Length: 160
Image 1: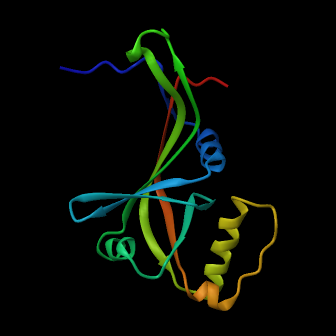
Image 2: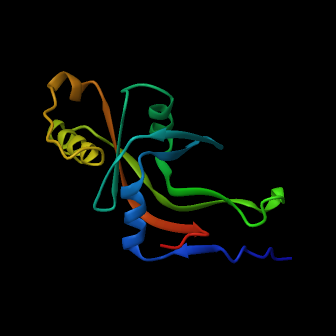
Image 3: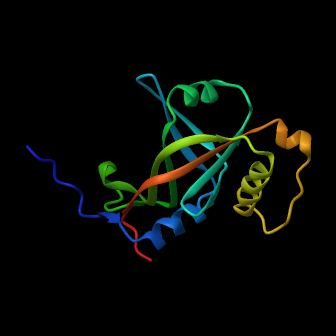
């Protein structure tokens, strides 16, 4: 038996719209694979040329997970708006949105100069300012680079 998909759900297939959603997002959610258990965290991020950059502490659960399995899924969502098709019918209340999922393998950036490049990309997501990064600051963080292999997009009740 097949389940009917709500007609208001649309796939987003053009890459410009996918990148627009990523660039509009303030945070992303990253799904890690911890043995057979999912583990999801919210991150600030940088994005450039089909590559997502994250930063974090040099130690911790996500580092341990990635050292065992570097497959990740990154989710972005924007343009949320609560609405009701029929105000007095609870099941008719919906959330309008657009979202993207990105699948890839995470790797750690170890080279100092490449870490600075990644941090500059990261900061461009949040500011037009130019930043300088101190050697201790750069050396005390991990940079995670995710080259995206596949993007999928979806929107619900969204029209421009």
